[in-house]
Length: 332
Image (cartoon, rainbow, N blue to C red):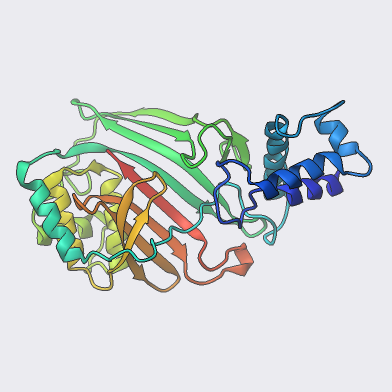
């Protein structure tokens, strides 16, 4: 079966390093390769297994795609670090060619103008889609896409729902490590659904964020349990913690944008489209080991996403320079 799996991989019309996602129609070259796969195999064994009797290549594509996904998943679980990466691994976001970078101080001004009417309001809880990479010494890295919704109740209790889903490929199986080894689960599979008892902590990040940039910096420093001022990477980590606890209102968004405008090393690079299809302005910090990209709404100043990519290769873990380490996309 090994030679047949290699044939299926080679016939994949949307390889992992291809320029487009695999959710569009097949081009002419892809259709030719698919038809050759089903028609020209000398032994006919693979065709017989996929399509007993006569077949129609286009109608059979769903079955072939399922075999390709299964083969890739098998490769992911059983092979070494130099094999095909996980099917869930996203490509790094790309800045739109020719787009004009928007300075952070200008964006902060827009956020302050948008906050003039006082809405939307601050809400405790979050709705976030994330892609996070896991690494080990003896297996290739895997990327797990998950969606998390946290809602707080008036009595101080809260619920947290986590599902396995990848909005780039709606309806397709999703990679998960639920229960141990990596495996595919149905899109929307519930990983956890929990209710937590009341908590009345008034320490950051449980307490509401302030509306002054200096006080917000102190708040984020306390949330990170740091005794010293936060570096830029630490500050971005703290922003992620904040947004994993709160859905910011217009005033809090403007305060955070003003704080970020005074952050050293965070430079504007232009426009991007995030993994939920939203247009945003990107701001990049190049640090040792990792490149951080912050994506912000160009009108309201709201943080849409935060991407971390490897700035150096880690061959012992099967990681290449530019691989996505993690990505979070926050929604209202």
